Length: 299
Image (spheres, rainbow, N blue to C red):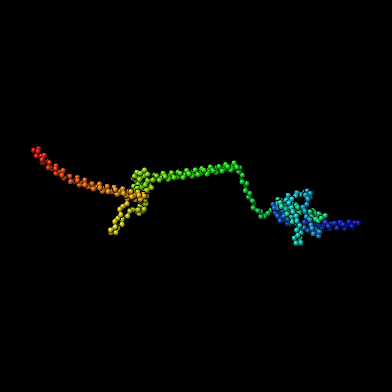
């Protein structure tokens, strides 16, 4: 009887020893990322190799072990994969793990036989973290009243700007007209002020000193001799002063009329001088003849 009990105990121990175990753990994710880890499955029985069932252990297992379940495990997915001669438990979550380790309790087995195994997955920081995303602050939403107020301020600023531009243009035109009205003009070589009166000296800008070299260059040159039989044209009374051709012609006519009158006046003066010169000897002779007669009468 004792021998039978010992044999049964050894057989039970052999069966327990042949149940699935968890081997090497290879994390595929970092802290702050969804969990991804591969865990080797070892010591599988032929029945477990044919169809091993895997699921996350019940929450009571965590409470019994006095271990807090990581919140990311609520989205866990476990899948047995064959990779060559190996069988691997591939564990993933959709939620990120914000811890440096995760306690993972899983149930392994076949129908009618389940065993709980623990795997502690240690995680590291990402050596190449992504650049921080700059989130722009949300734009302030204006109420309709605020939008209308902003629009009214923009309209008022635009109207004020247009009025200022018009006023500046009017002032510029007024200054230009005043400057044009106050400028002196040179007519027939004579400077005339804006009110029509002749000026003794040219305006200030015309009387500016001229450098010696320029002054010598501006000196009038002697007229060149003309070929025989060619007459020199009459001088033009109108200097290039900006006058129109009509005004220049009128001024020439006026000068010609004055010249003819001067010639006529000079002729009359010569006639008068000749008459005065002939009358003077006659008066002297009359006076000489009258003197003896007066003396005889008195004797």
